[in-house]
Length: 487
Image: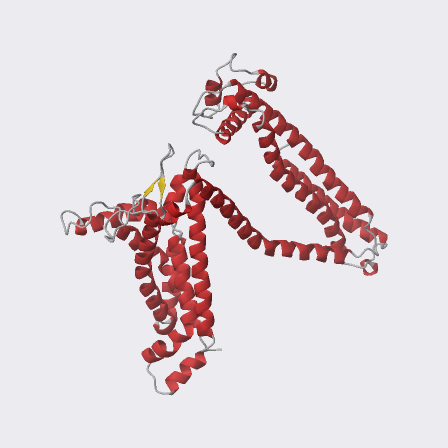
């Protein structure tokens, strides 16, 4: 049974449980809700919670564990002789999953029957033609061991799906029956519901922490595996980035870090002054009518997809810079893709990050500070320069560092506007690339995660994580240092 149907059945059972639990509680009190320990809705909610929570937990756990068990059991069936020399077991398993999904689509579409799918062999039909018929393309021929593993994968997955359906529905019915049978007028349903809601809130609050921990652990484990296959000194201090999946790769991160920091620096040079000046004007000088129009207009920039900024850099800003600094101009620029192209467009993208946050921080400065400065004879500009901005400095620094983190993690503008060349150069009109762009390129396609050329993406991601963490620690230090002067 499809997962969606299972969820709908559970929801319907929970809705029925809510109505029946409420009615049972009222019936036990003779229809007088004043006799009940809790409100009638609590009794219905108790039955619904017991029906939903445990069955959904079983469903999520099953969906998480089953693919791992099936992959491990099927992968053990593939003999080493069936794995090509230029491939690996993980890549062969990718073909197994594709073939299994293709057979499922063929059965669903009526091209073959379920019995024919189980009996099909490489001798009695053209597997590639059958899979192409249902839109599944393979990069190599389907060998007999791969087809046998795919058929076992289908059968094991189908069996697991059936068992999951039975288990989940059984748990839902058991929870329904347990909560319904103990529902009576003296049952403390409110305590049960409030406890469940409290645990739900705890889980919701823990999701961000657990997600961060999961991301960090995945980066750490894959980074350790990378450094077991590639020297750490060559990675951190290498000056050449030249990956080759055939061997002999040079994976020095210095050129990528240089491109990342160079482009981010130009972006901040553009975004920080414009953003802060815009924030000062909107908060201190603009009328309410101008502010109500200008601030939403600036914030529209934050909602534009980065791919649109990338196209703007590729089609507009790059050719414009090339016409000025290219061969017909100063001769500094050889192509439309360059550090300056990406930096300028990224700076435009970051303006609302700086201006909106800075504007909110400046407006949060107590009005009494402004009134005191003006009362002592300071002008409007002196009040802004010597009172308001120093008081808002921690928040402004936080906005700048947030913009810096956003710039360091940007990908699409870099891919389309900066080029793909990993080089060390001070010329801002040359093409360069960043860490994020290379993470994408290293993981594009069927990456073999046993090779350094694919695992290096996790090391690059770990490096960016550490840089961003350092920026956050620096921001926290600055905020605490300056906040003491105004509290």
